[in-house]
Image 1 (cartoon, rainbow, N blue to C red):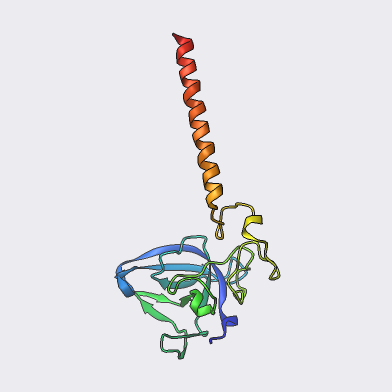
Image 2 (spheres, helix red, strand yellow):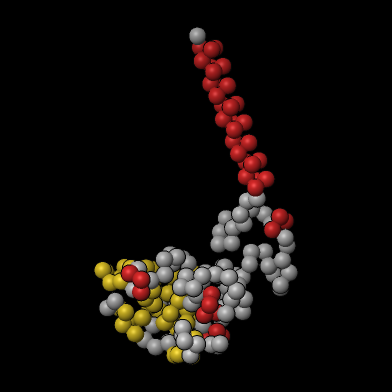
Length: 184
């Protein structure tokens, strides 16, 4: 396995399409300007990717030039500068397989939470919402929050919300009828 301590957590500052160039599988290429240094005034790193889940402000993991990764044949290869779609790419966005994490899809750039400092090495395992120091609460105990690790609603919660919506709609309909009757 490659040494992931060489990889850096970064934040995407800007995205640009690479014109009509296509990557593997015919996906459009994007040039990402990424801050991987802890200092905002540091030079930005450009990475060309076909990952569909990258957005401005995404906190991702980058394998910069000089680090290494394991290719599809299982061999360790160095990350080098390369021209992709006419743009010089200075690294690679990491997927969960490159990081040795369980879960996540191959070829999808991993996104890490805000707690991961820019410029730091990525976590050794996939971050889970609510985990701190490997102690996690059960899903039912976690509050509903928006964000990267949003918990899905249970069937009972969905039914309760649907029932509340029906009651509110019925009450609004009855109030409208009462208002119309009072105006006649």
